[in-house]
Image (cartoon, rainbow, N blue to C red; front, side, top):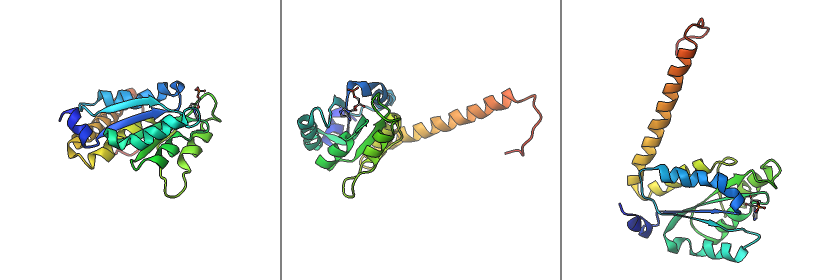
Length: 184
Ligand code: AIR
């Protein structure tokens, strides 16, 4: 399916972050989406809840009209971007708490994003969890477009295969050791 068609169905993913210093983490979401065998429309933008509040509001208000279906928002420290974007848009917002140079070991980032008041949810992933944010975004969009399900299934199969290979590798490494456990 062409990306124009996906855009008209609001199957785009908008990635926003509070600063360029967040990009090393947030590019995990971008690169993951790029690695998939699907042509999902996606955008990235630096928007700061505190430094560029007007642009942030404009982005949140217009996102749905621009074909975006899910917003991934990352910020660190007093990380108000995901919550403020959520306050301006009806789209689901996934928050990525970033362990930034100014953050208190990322606790401030996490709590600023996850502790939203009732009525304005932000689906919060782990600290620096940009890849999971991208997976969750696809899971949300797949509810509207089942053709995305195959890429999620492939993802699970690859993960399962990797764990099975790890078991083979571990068994090889421990082959000459006596077994102290029951067979699984
Ligand atoms: N930030 C930017 N505007 C508001 C906030 N909370 C965050 C950025 C980044 C951190 O502040 O998301 O994680 C540090 O930004 P900088 O630009 O000083 O490196």
